[in-house]
Length: 335
Image (tube, rainbow, N blue to C red):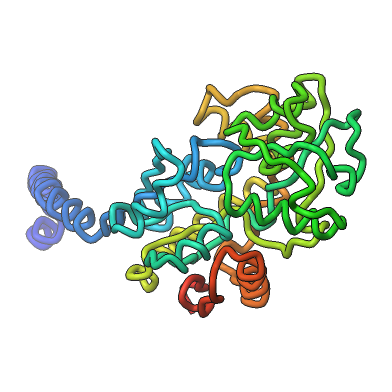
């Protein structure tokens, strides 16, 4: 009986030896198992994004998605790059030098009409920001009051078309106003009295800038004066990449970033200013608040009728000769 008990229940020495052997085996296998798991985890797909300008509140969803890890969750490593020249991003994407550019819907249609292989696959800011601004206490109380006055502008082409349509809507002929190129000094030009109005300010920025300077302005919005609605900021890519799965993943992360901003505007502002401390001031905080409601809540969605209508407007103003097929310059990826 004692022999049986001894065989069934090894000594403490033999039990210790077994335990030591098991531990050694586990330790030996742990390294290869961990390495295998690391190899199974896919590498992040790199995506280069050229902004339309230096980082500002308009780029909120991108900054939030970057800082909260939403791009990483989507399997992406996103590089956000501010351009040296704001005219370059679409051209660089068309040339295959970058994956994505933040652009403008009006310019996109004109660029495609000129032969650039670009396509819109998402929306960042879903309303116009462009507007016409005058001094609140100045002589211009309606667009009809612009007759015989000076209007400043920074970029010709589309801004001319906007102004022309708004003047037509008010019964004022284009040759009844004097256009003055004030470059990008829009607010100072109207505050100083160099011009009576400026076309091209962004309603979420210049109006706040003027108010903080002690010269509040009044805005006339194009969409209320004869101009069809359009998306101010869109995501564009080379048409050769229109089926790239990275585009859908990118928009999924941007959408998460947008909804975080809408749900937590002040917490999102804290993330934004921590990312760009030089923008932590009253002007940018005001611009942030005014921009929140204008971000696209469904950045991948495409309103085909709205896009076709606006392309028709560009044709009617002489900015494009023919309206291109919608599928040639705008898609809803993943469908």
